[in-house]
Structures are given as structure tokens and as C-alpha cells.
Length: 261
Image 1 (cartoon, rainbow, N blue to C red):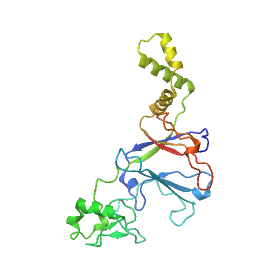
Image 2 (cartoon, rainbow, N blue to C red; image 1 turned 60 degrees about the vertical axis):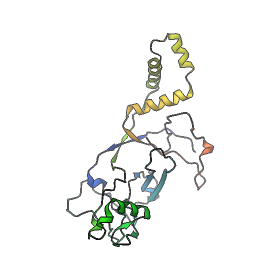
Image 3 (cartoon, rainbow, N blue to C red; image 1 turned 90 degrees about the vertical axis):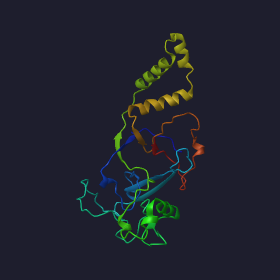
Image 4 (tube, rainbow, N blue to C red; image 1 turned 135 degrees about the vertical axis):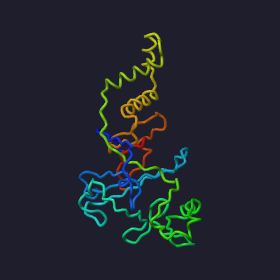
């Protein structure tokens, strides 16, 4: 992994958003992170997927997609920030290109229900989930399956990520926080004992204290984005070394980009 460089960190906060901002006809949620000065990465999205089971940490996957400004999929000019006019049209699970979307997750749905041939799915697993959640009863009754999105209680609730630049913390503030932490844990301990505690503070204590100081300024942050900066660690254990991080397939060292809190 390449050495971290100094730079500002952008913090992300989850905020309830109007339904029109969350409605997507073809893409799951993503982190939009274009690279300045890179014409081939004018549009750049990072897609994060994870297992729904909280104890499971083995299912994390991040996928990247990027395009130049002029491409066959997006308009050259940015879309309006104003909400679209209400048309009263129902949500459609079929794209203008004719492709159908999965009734469960909204991804491409090439598979169909073998019984009605009108409900579309991305996989057998999602077809089974929809069948158990009500399609079994509605299979031969509904004619508007491409305009009906059932609530399977399967997907995560959607929020808009609002970005703000992180305020810098001065060394004086960090030192004061560390002193307050020691004093708070020792209560009425003698001054000599406090000095001894400060001198023998372990690396584990320092790493955790730095994490708490950083997060305390904005405790509701859910994202820390800073390409080329460094992550903040909650523990001194299991911090990967440079040799633990494989190089990019192109041969370059990998750099840090964002952290989910």
C-alpha cells in the first residue's frame, strides 16, 4: 500500500431523502467518486456489498465502474437538482431498452417465474424469496407485476449520503483529550501517578484515543472519504502492513480511498 499523504477527509452522514432521489431504474446504491484530472473517470462509482448477517465479515465486496464524460449511457450535462414533475406513473420494472428488473433487488432480471412468466428475477434465490413473500398467491392473479414492487423486508433502508469536509484537529486538542481521558480514568489519583500513567501509555491506548477524538467531533458520520489519506484505526491489533496489501494488477501500489464507520 502506498504511503498516505496529507489531505482533507470528506465525511458522509445518512440523511432521509425524498423518494424521487432514491428511486433508481437500473443501479443499486453507490458512492459517486470521480477522479479530478482523469478524463476516463469523469463518472466513477464504487459499489459496496455486504452480508446482512451482522457477525459475518467475510462477505464484503467493492466493485468499481467508471466512464468518460461523453459516453453511451449518461447525458453529457448533469441532471437537474429539482425534483421531477409528478406524473402519477407507477414504478416500472422494465427499462426503455426492454430489459426487465428483479422484483426483489432491482438488478437485471433475466429469469422469470415458470408459472406466470411475468415476474422477473436476477437469481433463483430472489425468486424463492418473492414466492414465499406473496407471489405464490398473486402469481396467476396480477397483470401488472412489472409495475408492482413488493416490500420483502430484504433490502437495507435507503438514505442519501450528505458530504461535509472534516474540521482539522490541532495537536493541542489531541493532547488535551488524552490528558482528560487519563484523569477521568484515574479519578483522584496523585499527580505522580498520573505522570507515570502518561509515560507508560500503550500504543493500543493511543490508537483508540485517536479514534475517539476524531469521531467525537462528528459522532453521526458513517463514511470517511479521503483518497490517498490514511484510515483511522479503532485498535492497534491487526493493522495491515504494506507487505500485507497486494499490488494493483497494473503493478502500482494500492492507496486508501474510503472508510465505512
